[in-house]
Length: 62
Image (cartoon, rainbow, N blue to C red; front, side, top):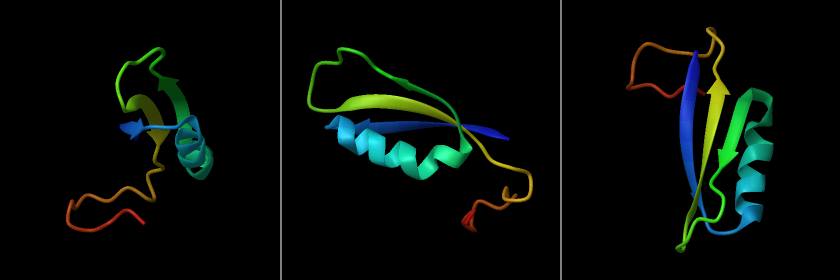
């Protein structure tokens, strides 16, 4: 199962920290270039294996 995640960040180091944590499951990462304003956005596509995915929204994945 693939999931798309939007991340808002102020400094490139923040994005780097998040991508390092999620590195084992990231399929792709696109960061907006030249975004004006306080927050920049990045879009990650992550792969969640079938064993970790749960059907109920009330329980956490981890």
